[in-house]
Picture 1 (cartoon, rainbow over the protein chains, first blue to last red):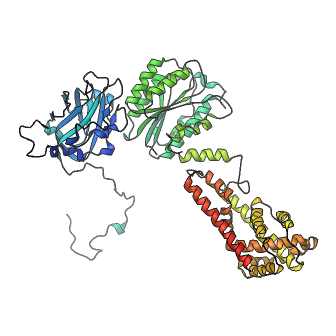
Picture 2 (tube, rainbow over the protein chains, first blue to last red):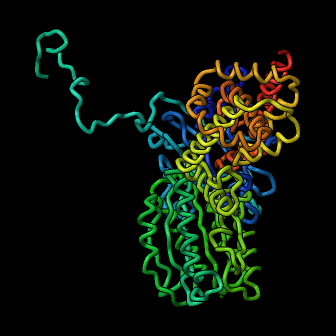
Picture 3 (tube, rainbow over the protein chains, first blue to last red):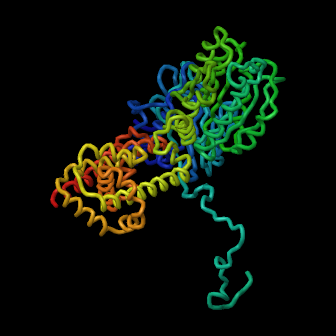
Amino acid sequence: MACTHDHSCEDHDCSSNWSLYKHIDLPKVTALNEANPGSVKSVFKAWEERLNSSGENLESNEGDPELLVYIPFTSDVKIKSVSVVGGADGASPSKMRVFINRDGIDFSDAQSMQPVQEWDLIENLQGVVEYQTRYSKFQSVASITLHFPESFGGDTTQIHYIGFKGEATQLKRDVVATIVYEITPNPSDHKTRAETGGGLSHVE
Amino acid sequence: MVLEATMICIDNSEWMRNGDYSPSRFQAQADAVNLICGAKTQSNPENTVGVLTMAGKGVRVLVTPTSDLGKILACMHGLEIGGEMNLAAGIQVAQLALKHRQNKKQQQRIIVFAGSPIKHDKKSLEMIGRKLKKNSVALDIVNFGEDDEGKMEKLEALLAAVNNNDTSHIVHVSAGPNALSDVLMSTPIFTGDGEGGSGFAAAAAAAAAAGGVSGFEFGVDPNLDPELALALRVSMEEERARQEAAAKKAAEEASKQEKGGEEQSSSQEATMTEHASGGTSEADNKKNDLSDDDNALLQQALAMSMDEPASSHDLQDMEMPDVAADDPELALALQLSVQDSTKDSSSQTDMSKLLADQSFVSSILASLPGVDPNDPSVKEVLASMQSQSEKQDEDKATEEEEK
């Protein structure tokens, strides 16, 4: 059984619910205190592959189980719930604190700031537990930062899969990149209707 | 071209008065800082650099990370030497300064100049290193100046704790004739993690290297002073043209005699530079194929029917008689070299002759930043140019034999 819904999974494809991974801006995902730089990108995959730990996983440095993962999305999303699959032998994270729409958080910031929401996690090796969010706070998420302060006693923290369930809007919270600023106005750029052939001009 | 914010930690403790690095340790450090700032800003215009001092009354940030080189150079003025260096506090303040950088997309890097003895123990340095690694801050250490026992060990331990995938480096500079900045220029601190040399570093290194030795034609590097090189080359060509015209005139009046080995040495006399002699000896080799006086006459006619080079020779015919009278063989040699080189120059411009000179091209290429003469594609191009010029020579030789 792949999910804890009270219906049988043959009716619909559970994986389509957990499809927010497609809206993650993967090149810009970063993590702090990861043992292998760049390994954080491997934890975002399709629901079916969440238990597939043959590839890389995200592991923190030896002796320090704290992890901080910054995830930007390509458009604003609404997040209903989060699922995290950790490692065995106590290498799973025990708590998760999230921050929304903040860039450049580092460990001292994460430890001192009040998170939008925090959860006590369980050792979710099969990936069947999902953690509901306070949906009203997660309505327009452009980036999310997950802070895992501790593990279940292991020396390091391992994460095999992080999944988000929700909806993607098509809105983009992007900085406008191609604005042309005028230092002096160029009359040819501002043809009025009178010049282009006349017509009624009106003040709006 | 990594986007980076860098904090440079300067050691301005009492130990920096020492003169074992010229002019003084502190001055050498200041020069190195200036060079590093230049290199960083040049490799990526959005890079920022900040400076702080570790000794004196306490750790003091002179300038927060900025891309304005002028500010950085200005703050290096009027720094006072004194006190003891506090490495741990310096690194921590640098980390704090980087944390508050304006552009969060920049990678963080700290460069430390450790010139005086370190009073912290290895454990606390390792803890600092691990904290830096956790926050993904890279650290470069320049170990110079004092060398008490344990200093190198401590710094190596610090580097091992910080190092994440070879982004951090340590450089040991011992006192000696080389300036601190020159030694640093060849290290990964300057060249940025082995990305292949920033243009600044490569150009600076090339300028330093090419200072004494010049493999170039006139003792002047065309890259450094193109106008002077061009002027020298033009005057050389004019002089050669004049000489060739004079030789041609003499040959018209003198009787034709054997060619042979004498041509080599006499053509040497007529030329002034190794390059020109290269050109004419190349021409001489072809002349050895000629068997007839008629051939020479024919070539002369051909040369005269060519455009400007031939016409310019007519203007200078009067100068020849003196030379011709003395040594008819010399005159003949000159005349033949004139004919062939006029043919050369009309078919192949001077510029391409220069390009055909392999050594010239490779020395130009070596001084270009970012071009590695050992690169296979560059070698290919050179080889093809050379074979092209050889092919042209061969064509000319076969042309002449057919006549």
